Image (cartoon, rainbow, N blue to C red; front, side):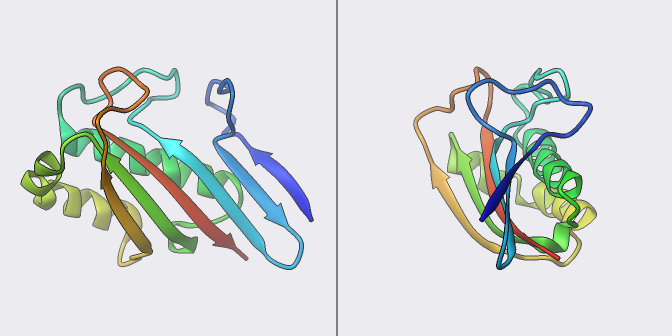
Length: 134
C-alpha cells in the first residue's frame, strides 16, 4: 500500500498532522483531517457565526478532496464535531443552503458529535472526512 500526503498548494503547511492522506493500492481512499473554518492563512473566518464556520470547514474538506483528484461526490463519510448542537440545529437552513452549493445532492455517511471544545480558539465546528477516489 502506498500513502500520499495531500496538501493544497495555497495553504500553509500544518504542524503535526496532514490535511489529507491518500491510500493507493487496491482502492484509493483519502482520509481528510478535521477541518475548521480556517482560511488559507489558518485564520478562523466567521467568528461567532456557526453557519459561516460550517460552510468554510466544508469548503476546506472539499479543497483537500479536489487536491487529491476527487470531487464532492467522492466523499463517503463525514464526522462533524460541534461545540453546541443547539447552534447547529438553529442554523440548519443556512447549513443546508451551503451544503447544496458545495456538495449538491451528495449525502455521505455522517455523524455529528457535540464536544466540550475544539483545539482552535474560536472554532465552533470541525469536519473530518473519508473519500473514495476514482
